[in-house]
Figure 1 (cartoon, rainbow, N blue to C red):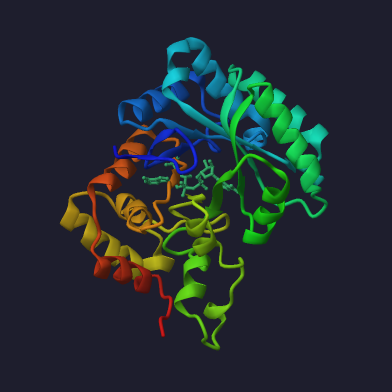
Figure 2 (cartoon, protein in one colour):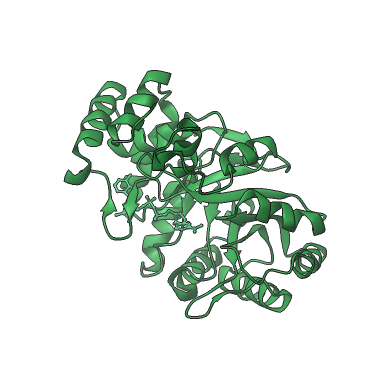
Length: 306
Ligand SMILES: NC(=O)c1ccc[n+]([C@@H]2O[C@H](COP(=O)([O-])OP(=O)(O)OC[C@H]3O[C@@H](n4cnc5c(N)ncnc54)[C@H](OP(=O)(O)O)[C@@H]3O)[C@@H](O)[C@H]2O)c1
């Protein structure tokens, strides 16, 4: 495993994080095994959200922490709040504070290292969010704050009132879902690929030392499932397989290595529930794709370049 100093923090974090969205229906023994595999492989960063499995993901993770209290000090735990299923988004102070209290209880811990606002709330009052952050920080319940799926201006608005830096923006990004890269590459062209849908979020985050955490790194979409071995992505799978053979890793490791190769020093969130798949993905840290290989993968996902 490789590590880096998370900008704007004193946290030394693994280049790859484990996403815990899909562990909700796993047994405590299965999650125990997954967490042990992750820690043994050097992963020290775990991503949660209050809504994953309706709270069941945090709960089963917390059961493992109860079994192994010594794990907590080896872990950086991040969770998210502000999506309310069936209602939608809630950045009110009351909701943020309650959500964190509930997460802490489920996770069996008295603090999370990082709290992210999960998706933008159209009714966001940044002063109220700042008050919630103040209260959480001063109570020792949250050490750092970030966001997910936020545009640069939405971050600027939050930052205008919060005295704590926004350190993370968790965003969907993979070889096949690369909107934030496509628009920059196709700048000034007429084609749809040139459309800037996210306010230049990639360059903004780099300028502001906000770490991008790519999510769904091998998932094409909810409807399609993963792009690994998916006949709709045959050309990409052929190129991934050739590189996997060359580097003696799996295609999943090549997909993660594509993200690690980007100089923004992103931290991919790998969402597997399988210890075997996790170990395969972690091998991405041993792969340093060449510039040409990076572009070969980009082009194999059928995206045009000017
Ligand atoms: N901020 C947001 O809005 C947001 C949204 C979605 C997700 N997330 C975060 O991102 C994490 C990952 O998201 P995700 O689960 O959608 O994406 P993912 O990591 O691309 O995983 C998607 C699927 O691919 C399979 N997979 C993963 N690694 C594999 C490998 N090495 N080999 C073969 N199959 C593999 C997994 O099944 P197996 O379990 O069978 O391996 C999983 O069901 C989540 O856990 C969550 O923490 C954040």
